[in-house]
Image (cartoon, rainbow, N blue to C red):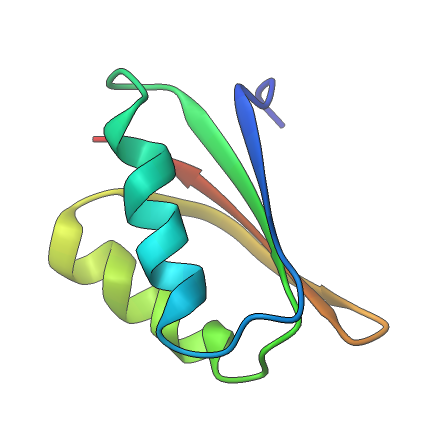
Length: 76
C-alpha cells in the first residue's frame, strides 16, 4: 500500500457526515495524495463506493475490521 498522506476519524458519525468530512479533507489535499478514513456506519460501505464513482477519487481499498470500516482514497 502507498503511504497514507492524511487520516480521517469518522467513527460514530452517520450518513452523510462521513462523506461530508471526507470532502472537506480532500479539499485540502493535492492530486495523487491518499486519505485513510475510519468509519463505523455500516452504510458507509456503499456510500464510499458511490462517492468514488461520482467524484473520480479512486477507492484504493475498503476493509471491515470488528465494526470499523476502513477506506483508502486517492485524490484525483
